[in-house]
Image (tube, chains in turn yellow, green):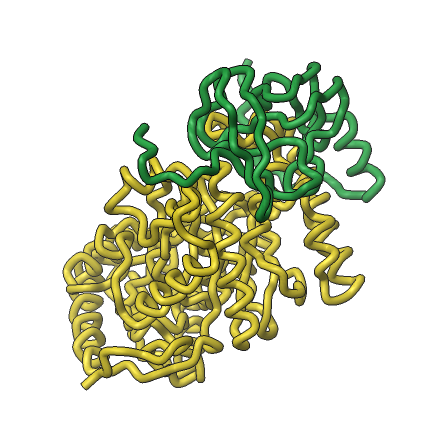
Length: 392
Length: 124
């Protein structure tokens, strides 16, 4: 029988054979390429509680795309929130490789390709569904146990920001980020473009001059890419939603954005979707668009996402429970089935931010222990892996 | 909007170096705005409407002056701004974001190259 309450800074989670800890016990139906995506969705829809992720690309990816996609597939298939994974695909060689790597971490799994099934999608559906159903039943007996905050990796995201994000919501996240790091856990922020104008403040907190240089270089490269593409940053970032809400410049948006990283030192810069090599606070050089950014954190091993919004943002991860919060009083009043935490009382001067941070941590630990988020209940989740170049 | 539950504070100045404050509710022209900075409250009279979460100027700013929030420059005044005015994209601009110009010369210094391309449709 599971205990109903946890100590402060503890939660109830699932120990995995590879030593990592999960906060959900998903059956993941993972289509490793676009050809079998519809079949994977058919199978996933037929298994109660299954999460389906279909990566739309496959053969033809080269260079960085091939590397990132391969790592992302492995990161999703072996994710600690996944109790068992059903792999569905169209490339026997790649599937055999992936299956070996999934088996090596002790993850319960089954794998089928179109080639195994006479190239017939319905045969694939039949065999995949029978195996997936067996996996779901097998893992349903697993129970949660008390685990420390230090076993969490949390991705920190913001989307459709407004000035309340920079004044309250992101500073709230910053306090949680500091607590997590102090407890021995791991935190990741990304959205490189949104450090522009504030990157000197991040660089100042870098563990070493080399890390400081890497932070600055990441921002300059992204800025250069925008300029080379003829993008007018004043029109695209802040975007029209941000501007209507009161953000006047990329610097203003970025200063508000980096507040979610708290005060602790930055251990290093990691690439898109890459797992941090150690504990502490890391910055991921990645696109800012939420679907890509969030999946980057998930494939890096984040079990939970903290996601602030100003005016409202419905998107969540399919695999990592995503805690949505806002401090905008209008958004909080109107988005009762989207926001998991209402910080507007801080904005309105009725609640101290330190008290709000205590309450947010409690909500976070409850979600880690099994409480559903709105995004999970309403199936708003997805996973999207970034692309970087042309395919063959 | 009902403000029965709201505290006495109408706007937040994040640091003493800031020359703008962010308003916590829509402000009408002529209102005396209570601005909180840490534990201190000061006041400024609004010269025009300020929408929720937008900025009000605490000092007069000449063209080219730095607009300061979070203790850092968030842009420069593109027009003369009086104290109590609405500060936003109509009278301030990013000091950082440009279409080309300063940003591209910065990128040339760093040696950053073009990103990996993708094909665009070319039509007659």
